[in-house]
Image 1 (cartoon, rainbow, N blue to C red):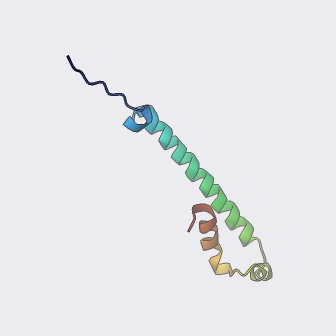
Image 2 (image 1 turned 135 degrees about the horizontal axis):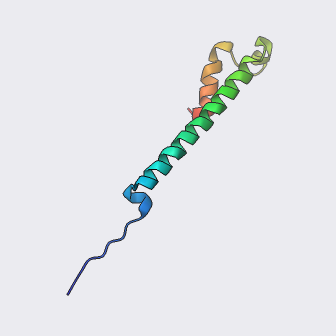
Image 3 (image 1 turned 45 degrees about the vertical axis):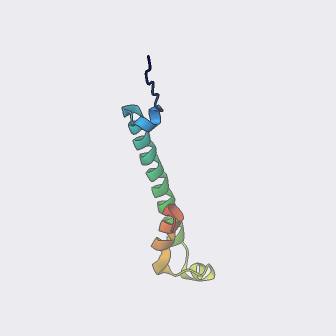
Length: 73
């Protein structure tokens, strides 16, 4: 007599708990990235034009720099 027995990893099968945990982790990760973006934007906007020039930045590029800092290129 022959039979087949298969086992699955709970995280790979997409159980409800696994999907909820992944969703919560995604929300936390997005919140963390948003905080990095906001903090970077606030700090760079607080600099004078001269300070930005010393760093090789223009005021118009602050949002792009903050986005790259938080979300990558």
